[in-house]
Image (tube, rainbow, N blue to C red; front, side, top):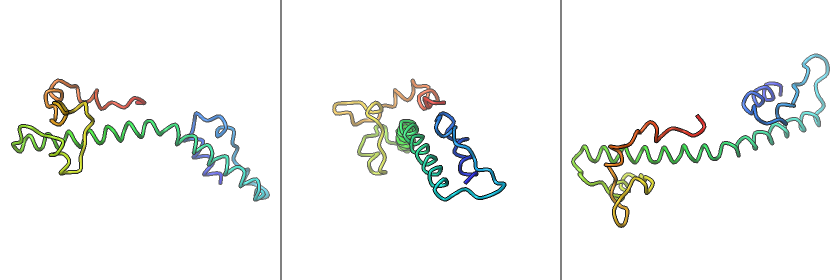
Length: 129
């Protein structure tokens, strides 16, 4: 239990409730079952709050990953001789990019000019870095 408490406190540094948890003193009697259950519930609740804090970051990273895979495939198709890459071309590989990477009416063609003018490292920078 002490290891779980210690690692949770290291991971969830911004949660005051988790930071207040104290490890059990290993010398002497073991903690009562009810005390252990209460502390483990507090740990779980702290980890649940931490997961909620991470949700926006996870969504942003998933969006970046989808776009990166789609951009990579568009570039591979372009290098293979496709001068115009469409949504349908990416669908063949079960890939998508956000609409900002597409142009036309409707927006179905990959926007290579945007890629040429973009600082790709800055585009894929994560907000919480």
